[in-house]
Image (cartoon, rainbow, N blue to C red; front, side, top):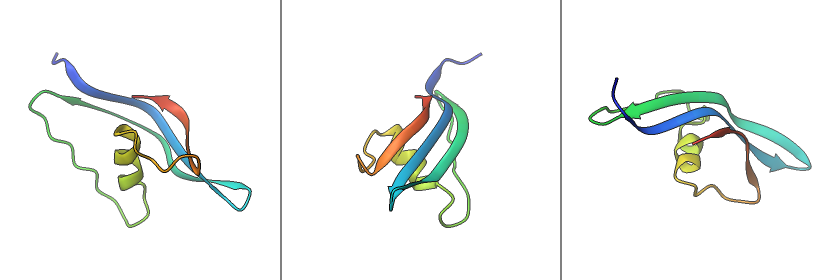
Length: 71
């Protein structure tokens, strides 16, 4: 078994809009091992960029919040 360079578990991200929380990412998990490539594929607005920004810890806080998960 390869050592994971990145492990994301149960990641959820929400944005505050007009006093309500809008979920952009809802409970995703993945691992990336040395030498592996991961492609996030999905429709526009499906949370690909928000997932990447969350992993890099550059989400636009405080409007965005990590509701759950571990990176």
